[in-house]
Image 1 (cartoon, rainbow, N blue to C red):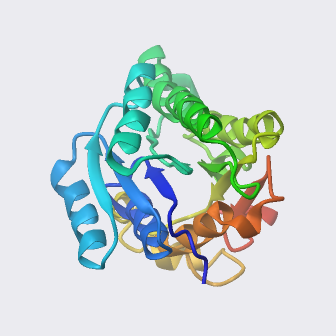
Image 2: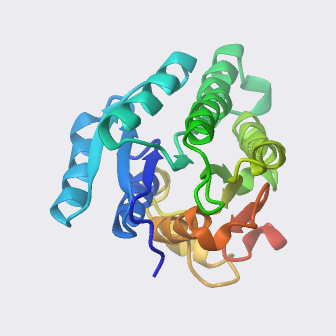
Length: 258
């Protein structure tokens, strides 16, 4: 089992589903976790409370991460609460379905301000803190972005969203070489069709429909993503840097739609 005892993690978008699973998995591995969210205090506090009830350390934190100053304040709060920052899971993001010809400037700005700008400046603030701490045993820190298969395969109606997620994949690729000399790695999870409330609201048979076209025979669960995140956050992943780990059961090899 991965041991992250003594490490401190920030997980953005951690009040529900994928982010909540990431926070819980990091805590189970021994990390203290800042459960960052935007406007969902009850959900975030429930995630943090469940971590504490299991013997871990966690704190809910509310912030609009489309702001550079908010990202800096988030990192400062983690340091204030837990003394350091070792892991950033930049998971916060927004999905807006909109055909290309109907996508307006406000939609574009909303998506990119959170999905790309927010992740970029969260990583910058976290990396500055990690560098100031110094690398112990070669472990300077881990930055992991939540990208998407829509940034690899085109999906109608998700042009702007897919472009933002492709940007996160390239963000990991470009930050990895810059930060590697500090013992910090930057990677991305390329997330496939995942069972969550939003997808089930769109299609109650979402899991069954996607299972029919995913080679491994089932849709992705948030815990699948959380387990991959913990690996990338671990000392065992020290030489994985600037990479995109696709977690889609093999779907993007062919890209069939259900």
